[in-house]
Image (tube, rainbow, N blue to C red):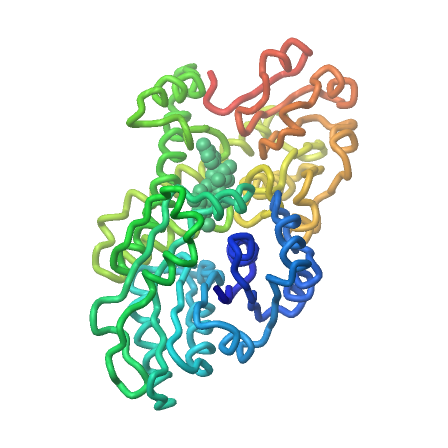
Length: 454
Ligand code: UGA
């Protein structure tokens, strides 16, 4: 099949390369010429394991190209996936949908014939219905018979760090279809929906492996995505709330999580207590979900997400307080090393990163902060240029008075505590992700503080 992927960030670039891997002819579309130039030369402008190989393989095979030109996109294919960003609106909790609106508008102004658009971005419930109306209106203004836009929703569940695997081997495929009668051509005539047949053909190699597919209405599909992220955020904040109780009682949250996680109804995944969740999705998605519930007059339904958010933010404050306490209350004149800047390992993404937030807070409270991250140094420098960035773990540890492990990179989990102790001025560590073998660190003479572990 020939198809376009509009928006080439984490989601879109991965989807485009994965579609080429499935055998399709793919044109990636982005308004950012620098991104298009990088991707066209086989370079991924962010860190995502496995993606550079997949991208260059298909750029070289000629199955994958990139452009900034919507004319080319509309002429290239009748099937389009939209994976543009929906960031949080400044000064509000709501999601900014201007980029999805722009994608539909640009396409609708140009398409000829029957086109199907699959939205993949995380959007407020009701967006697909609105975009269908927007697309149909623009097509109608052009008055072209037999020209139409069908907007379906196919949410994406990929995790950064596992984006390629999650796209090629998803747990499930969800497809939301418009209500009967919603799709009309430029002459106002009803058009039969074709999104399901097209998606089944497009994802055939995935569906042949018995991957479940759930075909539903667009509102359900939109809500599936945001509910999944809200549930994951709730699970993390639940264990972090219990972690606060563990701190007051001397109990161990990790053992507790292991024990409750053995109940198949609960499950151990996403029960790692620590500095909490960050990134470009979970924090903004729970906020946008609350904002949308408010617009729908159902805000009470989601007020618990405010608590989920609050518990999450409290973990960051707790970490900063523990570092302060370790220095007797004041950070002035002290050096602290923060290991980690990315919001999670195997990513260079620092959006709403707990690690970078803590580094920033410690610096603002007067500490000299040294940061090291295996991949996120450049992205972190753009957000927080005033911190001191050390090129290696060794440089970051030398003469420091406290180490905070804020992202559980393998490189940090495997630090030899005996080797590290010789480098530092004061052997104190705060394990913000409960990821270190704490006994080994204690045995090596470190003063070890964990979150929620007695
Ligand atoms: C999340 C979802 O997991 C994906 O399914 C979804 O597709 C994606 O958002 C999205 O909406 O695009 P991602 O943001 O890549 O994926 O990151 P996660 O792996 O979910 O981790 C989120 C945060 O939670 C990280 O900061 C991580 O450190 C933290 N976390 C995770 C914990 O604090 N504890 C845990 O047990 C698990």
